[in-house]
Length: 153
Image (tube, rainbow, N blue to C red):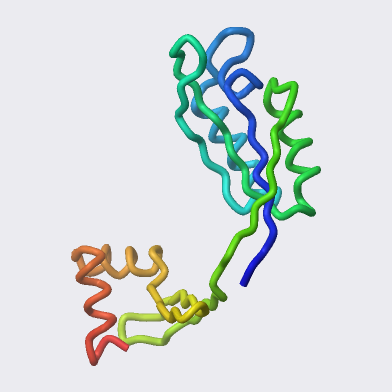
């Protein structure tokens, strides 16, 4: 399945690296990223980059649906010191996704399934797998093996 997405980004010199010459604290960067995700961004991440004069910098990149672009840009302007936001359009190819809840002897476990382009794969929801592993004092791999065993499902 093909979907159109936009990348919008704020570079270090545009307001994500510093506030009046001081480094933006990590907690503030995380808060901005969380707000973007809560506002509908499909993905938000940072990229370490080298700027002119070999200065280190951080690029903030936001992937979003075209319809969400304006609101996310407004959020970037409001919560960073940026004077500009760059944008580019891309096509995004995605698999169809399903989330099932399996009733197992170990309790209900969510399983994510991805289909399309000749692919059919599934994996257990990390949080559910981690809960089983903690309860039994085993690793994640062993928890998945328990679920995959004949008595596990």
